[in-house]
Image 1: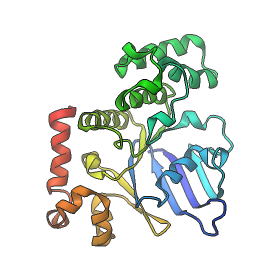
Image 2: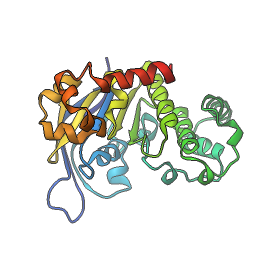
Image 3: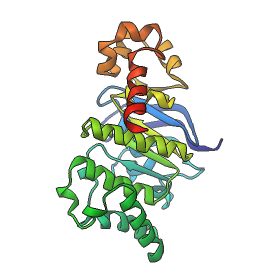
Length: 274
């Protein structure tokens, strides 16, 4: 497998702060993997996504020490980084900047220098793929949360990135929207692309066999599977991960692969997504 993301000795410190918000000693992400970033509110989950895409320090000022490479390239220097790694923000409306839905797809492709003919083909394909052709001329700020997210996903997919980044993507979705999101993420992984998600609902993705980057006291720890995560995590930290874990902790701790959490995720996939 190809390594699509390399992070080493990374420290990110915001202005007026003497200590780094986040430190990543070493983290390697391979092609086709699903990674879930876990941690408390304010622990630096979103900061990690911003640094991968170059938003930090190019748009949001912060001191960045260490090494980040996306397919061998430095995201802070590469103009092509937004095509290699693309990010969906927690609040989709913060990311919608154009006057119409179709312009949200056209604008970034035009900025990348894509030929007009190829842009038209991509526009038609992804409007239909995500079922939003009927709203192509709508103002994005008037869309529902689900429609807004599909608009941004259309734009993300059209750039054909190697890495898809999602910042708490379930936050503004109802159950139907969450199941549709799961289906999309599953298809991304099946296509061989990499997905990295920050979330407070990891139970939604357990059946996809994720790996974990867990933030504890400003430092991150890499766990290659679910059992490894819970073997090296205290009960108090486990309980804080998810409301579902809080409700079913005793059952879960016996065997994290066979309790209600995993069954819930499997049932959601079988009955709704497949």
